[in-house]
Image (cartoon, rainbow, N blue to C red; front, side):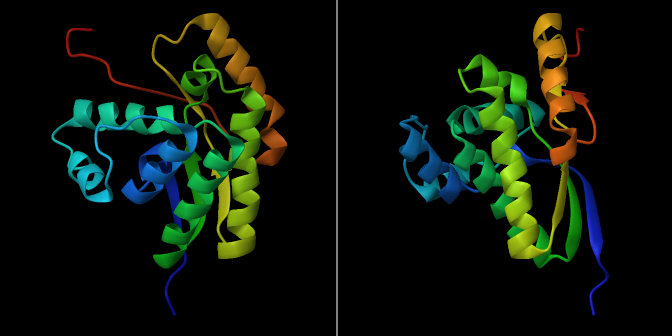
Amino acid sequence: MPVPKIELHVHLEATVRPATLLAIARRNGEKLPADTVEGLTELYKFTDFKHFLDVWVLTTNCLRTADDFRQVVVDYAAEAASFGAIYVEGIFSPPERFLRGVSWDTIFNGYADGAAEAFERHGVTFRFTPDMWRRCPIDLAEECAGEMVRFRDRGVVGLGIGGYVPASD
């Protein structure tokens, strides 16, 4: 019998596979630099951290609906369960989506609904540590933190900070 595993640090937007990204982008009318799974697979061959972040931005910009966020969690739960994970703490970045017109409720409810479905379908418990980018405007950071607290009973267990900082900073 496999030993149960936990995963304490996974960026959920970075778990989106090329086929899923293509489907979500088409559903939401987003343009991608490739229009095939093979083309997107090539794009996922990261050359450095900056390239990873560029693809991450491309991916996150496609996420628009609660169903998109739910799907990200449920799809990753299937993968995590395949390697024996029973608990995952996922990171996602709500301020960027909010600035692109997606409501806090859509983002947080989508992820929380995904967690409920992930447990039901795959036996994986999800908790969340949403993050903000370094130098996020204070008013936006405070608003986002308030939303995180509002969803503490639906799986939010922490607050993170991330993003690319050039060496000159």
